[in-house]
Image: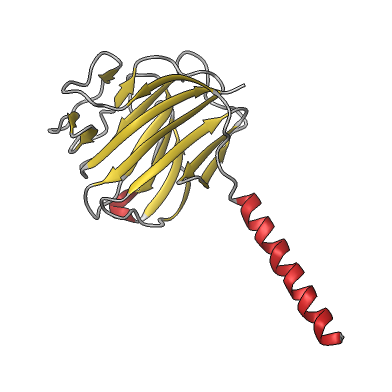
Length: 213
């Protein structure tokens, strides 16, 4: 009987640990009103997107095979022109075209300038760091960790959401990183989303914006 009790106790611990792991890695919310979507199934980028005011790199944002492609952009993001809802979830597919990784986006920026909001980077600095930064991707207040490594050509599903003072980032339905901010960036100067890139070839698709209750 003692042996059976020990087995039952061990199973209970395993179940409890599993439940805690799922809670910590909970996924993005499933509610919200879809206010914009873009599948990039056209030859030209169109009026919903525009380059910022930064000094452009040698590369260009282009549409090809139903994907938005960027390379050698040098931090001149492609901005979604409409302001985001105050409580929002943004979703999209992201793909690195090389082993350098460097899947980079910005959210709650001013619609013109790099590093005017939060910068999120999966596999930055040659696939070595994952980062959420506020106004400066090299700043002392950024959140970083050793990268989980972007796999070349693998399609990742990103979701970024904010309801209150914490920015939450999910990858493939699992919480990836968070950025609690006691003074969250908001208002007309912090209302836009952008795809970004340094030099690595990257691609994005299936962009969605949801207004959260």
